[in-house]
Image (cartoon, rainbow, N blue to C red):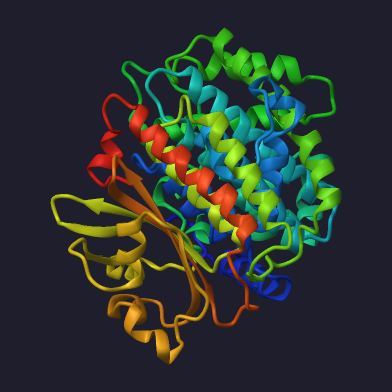
Length: 501
């Protein structure tokens, strides 16, 4: 512990207590602090990273709309036709782009909800988002490094300063006055007013929220220094986040000295990052352009979306179900020539889930090794414990699931709790999903052999709904696209064949 640690410094401890008190009064950072680990996990994930990213975004309706608006903006018009599903947006734009966007939006939404909307608070937020852009570009230009970690670390490098400007604006004004009028350094002014440094505040809050240690450890500046060999990964992340934040600060400086400051920073940190100073400058310039273009889209989006509203609970089948399903099928058709089977299954599942407004939607895969149908992907109210229980033998049983698979026919059950129907529903379904009332089974059959199916249901708490005849058209086309994609592959996708979904 240092002398500035809130556990050993009375003034620092008092500041942290006041900060937590203000946070409790105005609201935590629920949108950001709770979702960051999920987003980072999706960005760093395995073969299912694209699906996991889409699933994370779809859990937040406001974020979903903003991602789709950005994907369809002029900024990405080079990709051609419109994008209607988050799954396709992730495929086209990449998990890093979507993850960066999601982090930035959740940071803005979370802090904006708690802020008094002061100019200082807004400036700190904009600098953090810009730092994330710079971190991403720098990491993409550096050899053999992961851009997703750099984005997160750069964006949160100034978390302590952001928290003070948002929750303790009176203290921030005193610090700013000491820097401006008394010509004190920022660290000296922070100690004078707060009894604790900004990075200590950020680290303390980050630990409290359970953010990854990798992120926490990079919140302290790493000064430039000569290096004889490549930096350890943790030091590299610290250098990236320090440089990104410093560049963002320079770009937001209104004194007109930004270019000189940027050139100086590039010269100081280039060797540490294994780059040339010119590469650093190009990365910063590209990041600045991307941030400006993205911001113009999101500002327009915010005018149409109530960012402070809580996500609406599921409301059942939407009135325009056929249109949503059709747009999703169009996305699948456009992506099919180049998408993997895993990607197409993810798009199909999202289309069904969003189009019919199911409480939960699950893709089941037939495992030849286990002689069973096993749940692999899911959207909606499906916990890990439920997913583990969602499997059954592929040996024929006289129930509705095997009937659908054996006949390759979509089946919809309007009231699975009807006593007259209870013997048609398997025990595993009744035990795993006790709140479901209506459900659909959409089998996927290749060369007369079922390889899996898409399942979706509505809870009893939702308005009564049906899968109508009009819905059957796009649903059948959806599964035909999956079947044709499977048949057209000379070899089935490894992920699908091994159950990697």
